[in-house]
Image (cartoon, rainbow, N blue to C red; front, side, top):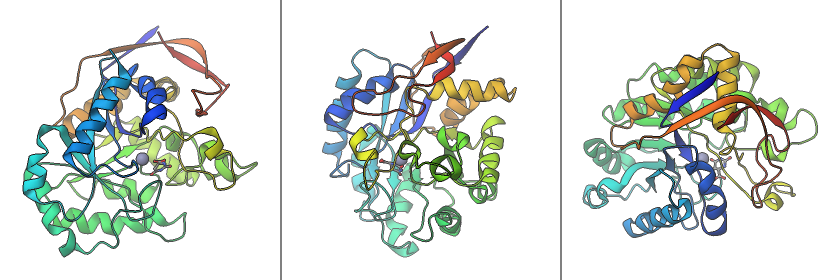
Length: 333
Ligand code: DOR
Ligand code: ZN
């Protein structure tokens, strides 16, 4: 039996730049129709010129593949409505990082004073630009996301017309928040549907599973699985595939990020099959995103999978993927 998916989308992706971009971009563009591209380069993407140039470099790296990079800016509270209007249709969303919370986020937001954020968030609301948020406080690592829920609520209440996307949610508290506010949405990664903190640090430390937010408890994973597998209309697949060179992962001071682009669709298919929810996979990997992000144009692309073993390569360039060397049950044909 073969499985068909139409125009899969990755609504949270790190493509990096230069050699890394050349290595990883084709691994997304061969499978996905498009992806929301994260702006946390060094320096972060914060001007029209930088955004347009980065989009061009991505297009060069993917060659002939049918794939649209949906570009984002790195949030700054100083963006004016005129500036955002001048970005035109190329700007799909803005990504907000709390300062210093993860890779290359030093220029992020210090404190969430609503009046300080109001001009930019009002302009975004009026222009229909979604706000993607890395929702973690700088508290105890296991509590950071749950502590951030009150900030999501404050933003959702003060800016009711702003679409707020809780990126890569990992906790049952975030799942519960989703249905309390009509303007809150979420992405979920592949790895947070699969692993808990036990897989990262319960035995020998697994650097290739270390990411921000860190994987949480089994009951959190259950809550995420439930809404992903039921194709909850406010939830989208966003891999947060975040490549780092092997030496930066297997070192003292391991960089955060799990690299999943080349395995994501195959493993999601297996997960949805296992739970007899295959009919909801299309909603999770494409249809919900098309409805939520009204401002994206999605190129047509058909992906066919079969139950045929796929041995995950040990490395792509310098990057070790999740499940390196292991056999997956489904292959893209
Ligand atoms: O694990 C992560 N890696 N989480 C993030 O938020 C950023 C990402 C990266 O850019 O490496
Ligand atoms: Zn990310």
